Image (tube, rainbow, N blue to C red; front, side, top):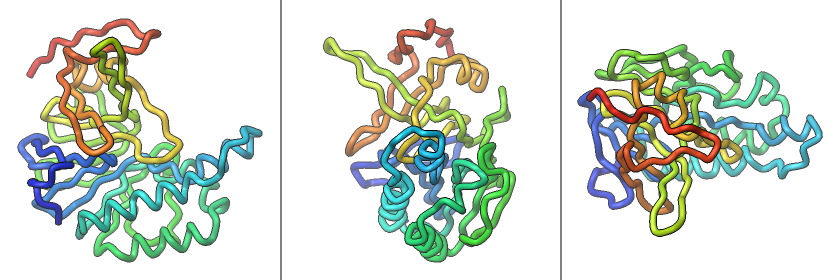
Length: 245
């Protein structure tokens, strides 16, 4: 497994559990040799193409390549895909056979692979292997797809596709991020065609009780940004950022 001294990783704790945030968008729990990834949304491109939106149909291949590189780098014993791994219930049938074979091989390369059920894929296709669960407890953490409003400490969830916007030196930067208050965490979306919701949005306030801090994904590093330094998108009003921590 990955060691914390790697310069590209950000070491922190979630509910007292040591974690490493990788700028590619995966989370590593070293003590349990676990890699967590969320919202892969395989075959989102083909779903949009079926509705007449002409976009390149290579999102699944790109997502698989990046995920494979992350797994090879961290060498986990367990991978947990935190829901919405497949964009819809027809994604399996639209997947190119070469991509399907690559996914099967990737799942088989890990000792323990867990698919958490998402709202897009309540029944992930079984042919790729792995175990399908609604949620999973790992040490002092509970892993699920949909974040609960004001859940107990220890929740790691996906679904909201967090992004952070930071303004400085006359310009603003918007990037995917891990959203956390130290007790809970919402994972960034990993899929190639997934967008993001600003963490200043009220949806995050309902989960955390205030705007969370952001671990912002840069090209080669993860940057910790406090909630007070985050700015909303232009269409958003500034929410309460006072944290009850």
